[in-house]
Image 1 (cartoon, one colour):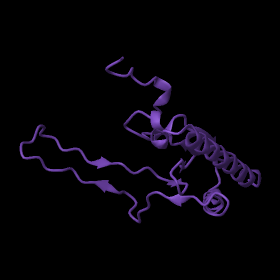
Image 2 (cartoon, one colour):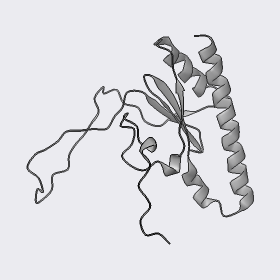
Image 3 (tube, rainbow, N blue to C red):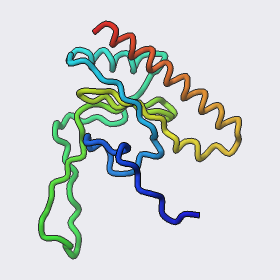
Image 4 (spheres, one colour):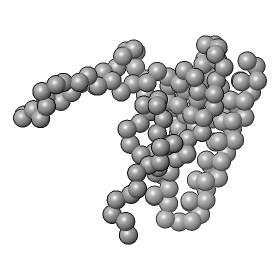
Length: 152
């Protein structure tokens, strides 16, 4: 057995600062490039929130630059203090069971399959049901998204 997993290949990481950890649980992400039309965001969100997908917002804030406060340590290890900003522009949605996530960014939409939920599935039937549900969500997501993109 291998003690330490190999480093993630360079193509797993993008320059979009999407995550600071390996994406294996949400691997692979699928990218859909969006046209340069601001009105498309509202249409996509309405489409994804409505039946049959009925996605939910994962996180939302009214603050434009949500800042994570640095925790003061008893013995400071470094003298410089760096501001941490961990909010990207856009929205993140997921289905009710958390089987998939959708990140809507300024130039693209990303579809993720959440593989963490398979760790609970000890029964092959449950595992297969989750795979079928992900397939339904993915097909529904692409159908709905393609319909909105066709209008632009």
